[in-house]
Each structure stands twice: as C-alpha cells, then as structure tokens.
Image 1 (cartoon, rainbow, N blue to C red):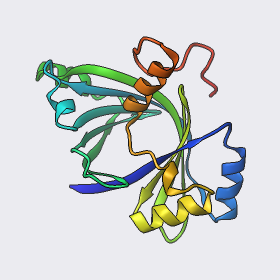
Image 2 (cartoon, one colour):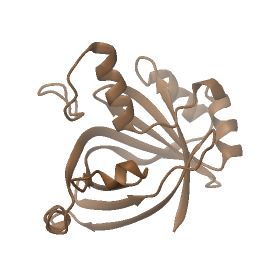
Image 3 (cartoon, helix red, strand yellow):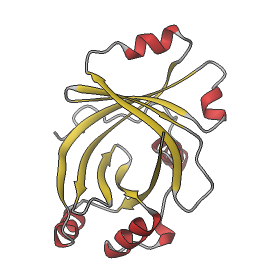
Amino acid sequence: MKVETEIKLRVRGGFTKIRHSLRKLGFRIIKHRAFESNILFDNAKRSLRKHGKLIRVRRMANHTLLTYKGPSEPSRYKKRHEIEFELPYSAPIGPILIQIGYHPVFRYEKFRTEYGKRPNQGKILVDETPIGNYLELEGSPRWIDRTARQLGFSKADYITRSYGYLYLAYCRERRIRPKDMLFKKGQVKK
C-alpha cells in the first residue's frame, strides 16, 4: 500500500499564469485535460467518514478507477495510505458496493490536467471544479515545498482538506444547501 503525500493550492482566476510558470519550470502535460466524475461510498452509519477513510469510484473517458484511502496522518501535508486500481469503464463496481452495504454519499466533478517533468519526483494536477480552480502537488514534502515556492505559493497557502470539505465550506460561506459538487448545465467547458 503506497502513501500518497499531497497538498492543494487555490488558484485565483484562470490558469494562464500558472501554465506559463509550469512550462518555464520544465513541466509538460503528461495527461491532457479530461472530465472526471467521482462518487464517494460509505455505509449507513458513515463508518468510513468517521474514521477518515474513503472509497471512491472515479470515471474518466474509457476507464474507472477504484480507490481506497486511509486516514490522514497529522502533518502540514496530506499523507494517507492509498490503494488504487483501474477497471474497464463499464465495470459494475457501483452495484457491487451497494450490494455489500456501501451507498453513494457524495458526487463531485472536475476537469483535470496532469503535469510532470524528468526526473519524475512528483506531479502537478490542475483541477477545474465547480467551486474554483486548484493545483494538487503530489510528491515528497521537500519537492512539494520547492515546487510550491517556485510557483509563487507559501506554506500558508497549503490546503490539506478534501474537495468534499472544501465544497461544504463553499456552501456555508454562500448560505447554499449542500448537495453534490457538480457543474451546472452549460457550465461544463469541454
């Protein structure tokens, strides 16, 4: 089981400046911009959430990714054990999870572009979400700190919360009743 170490960074406005900075630093697109649909599953008692765990089904163009994440370790970075494997897009994983007592509890969408460079020490994920734009930096703490600094961010900018948590905060600030974090019709720019 691998340990994923990451942070999020909020990007105000668009990505033009960030993309320019990434190119200047030698980062290149590893995976082109793609739409992702994510569903988090839990049981009726919300046992996974109570213990800081999650089961996620992510659907992308022609495949599905099933992910388990363990609780986060206390840190300036989000560190958690992760098990992930790819399935064919049509794999009936949702119905299987439902049959064993797990049900969809939160859905969220985003567009993601993945950047990397040689040597592969980490990756930068550019996420466009219904609640704003974010970068995710995944790698060693030293690599994350250096890369964030090169992009003009400080440790005070680090976000270790999930998109679910960020969505709830977004709804509270705007006094909106939370549902799922989905793009509105016509909002999706493919």
